[in-house]
Image (cartoon, rainbow, N blue to C red; front, top):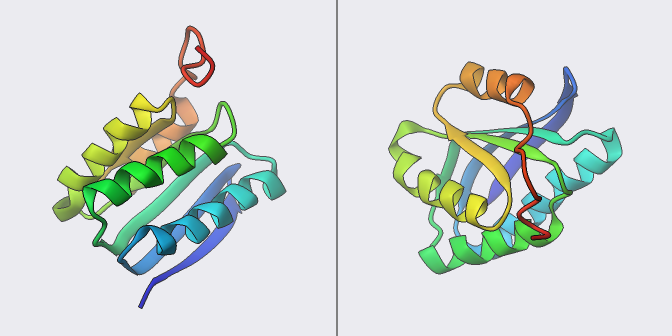
Length: 133
């Protein structure tokens, strides 16, 4: 079935609602590029991805390469919140850790209101940008 998604600007946040099944890196890269293109188009650096209806079948290797891909393409200073089904939390927390280790500012949630609150209230990280240090 692949990934189907809707992207729009809502209150200064790029909101994404995804559904379907992600089987490999080739299905995730176009999805991620569409999100990053929307950030550029809307001139926004906050992203909320509601992926509660998206099933993941990525290997650990594909997850690692996805994070590298995002680290290479995400705009500096951007912040992303991923809202997942609680059953996917262990895999998504691994993804979050890998992203943070690559200098991305992301967090995984199971509650959409918490995710939105984090996006609008959390100050940017202090200190040197991990992507450039």
